[in-house]
Length: 564
Image (cartoon, rainbow, N blue to C red; front, side, top):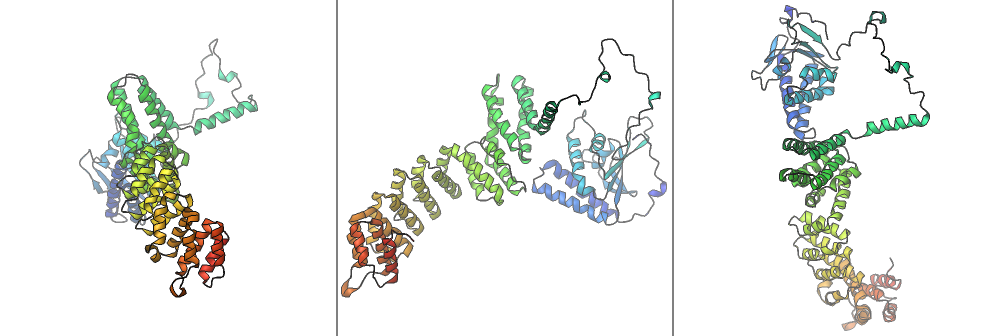
């Protein structure tokens, strides 16, 4: 970096450009848009991703004519081949000024830069925009980045003559040390000073166990989460230093950093911060109301519908499936009120593996907060109520019986059906009593589901409604599945008392020897099989030779105990 650049020949500016400056000008305009998007949006934001794709496409027309672009830089201009291709007079918004003020007078972009290194340059420009005076300047940051497809020339602003200095990335290596005979003689060792050179400085004197220990510790050090360590230090400072400015600054850092951690998928670290902040709020000394509210409110902010929805959407759009343990750890720190948002998004998620992971984490959160789960059963949002009812049944939540009973009057048939299924899973006396209300529901699927459960559970309180349906006219117009469900339930609930009626349907004859409808007779046979008494068996035996195939098959199945 210490060699001086040669002056550019005067003929350089007069040479005819190999292609139109408009291509370079358009490329720089898109580059500026990409810089602004990088400063405003997170990497997973669609606006940022579109801007980056546009930026990559803007370079293609240029590379079709040349393998590199050389831009000279003045206070307000980028110049190419002696022509201004970008002019920005306002220094506060000027991209050329950002380079010029730190001494960079020329940049050279080579083919492939937009694919491999452009994001690194965007990161540097974003950092420089927010940097304080004591932080590294643009030139230092570019040098540290060690670009291979971006080169530059700069002027050392500290030199009086301001001679231009050639600098390219990677930078020149330091001058080699002089030969040993030219080096200054080492000072004479003082008495009592131990010199490392006098000892065996290698590790070969260690035994195998010690070497294994060192290797393990090195691996542990490299595997440790640096972010968590830094956050732990911040929390310690917050607890030990009662200064209001210090705590204000750390509160802001924690609040903003959590969002970046979430967007990067560091769920375990976020969970750690949320957990530690609650403990700190409980034990912290000299905490004023504002700071305590900020600490306690960190889980509230993440649990709110907006931030949580953004997180779930980003996870669904990401190609990376979150670690299940880390996701569980994060969801354990959410407030119970987040369940509603989670239930809403479970029906929207498209990524199957992400949906499965969130499903498991949501189930754990619901199991730990059954009071909120029961409350959500009465939600006006049908999807939230549906998911809450389903999970309440799976958890056999006794407190959900009354809200589920109210759902049996809801106008949405799918919600009533889910309530029936949930009450069946809970299977308490109260749940079965609520199910009796669904026997005469106006939706066929709800009726069938309810009567099957009541018959299987032997809920005799439902017998009057079931008997009314079996002996009435309305069931005659139903399909065979519904008829069979009601008759089998009737056989299970009525027991011996129903044999005479069922025998009359199966074997009886009406006026002029006419028998009942084949489907009703088959259903009566299956009901007699459910009763299983001697009288029921006799009735079935009398019908075994029936000429009607449907009836004969039903009788045979009933005799075998209803086996298929």
